[in-house]
Image (cartoon, rainbow, N blue to C red; front, top):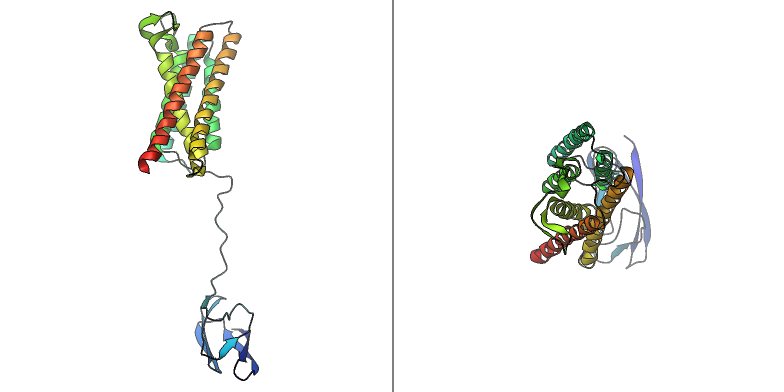
Length: 290
């Protein structure tokens, strides 16, 4: 085994004498000791190409060596060559069990509603399918870590609620317009309508998804409130995107059942209600934890 030379320069402060010593040690497993003018250096060499140097100092002596092995008053441990941190790069965390189940449920729902929509001749089939697929693709693109199981399940249910509302026929209309209870002429809507609950629920879940994927990784004590507002705004933006899809679908099939200003207005109100409720839950959960 080869010997690796090390230079140690020692200065005696009492006499001003300076000496230069060369210490050798092998790369094998063993121990070598150097003693001179009150300075003792022990070198413990492992099976690799690194060493640990321990210096014990006596009064009246100091070392002026600038090498990495002799720093006065300190014990130096020469660690092995640093490993490069494992970089995940553009990759993402693997799907959790809950996420895999949610993806499978959503995929089956998309395929099923696609077949149902084209079989029944629903003019909004392409529009609603496109909306769900695009939003799902955005979630996949933004995802960096595994989503909570409850959130993954909630997103799958939101996809099914959206497709069912726009494609399932109830009487002469779609499920979105199905309602229970009296109609308010002043408000221009039924008090209990599937459309309202579906929009509020979807916005609630999407706001939580925006928080988990976009805001929570950067949330701190100083900017948490602003990030909650950002998550709510992102959910409202996605809700507005859905309204745009409905509008384009309406134009494509000559003003069918998508609704007019009243429908769009109440959709936006319900979107805001759901997203704002999610923002309050997120904010209060932090306050409760504090």
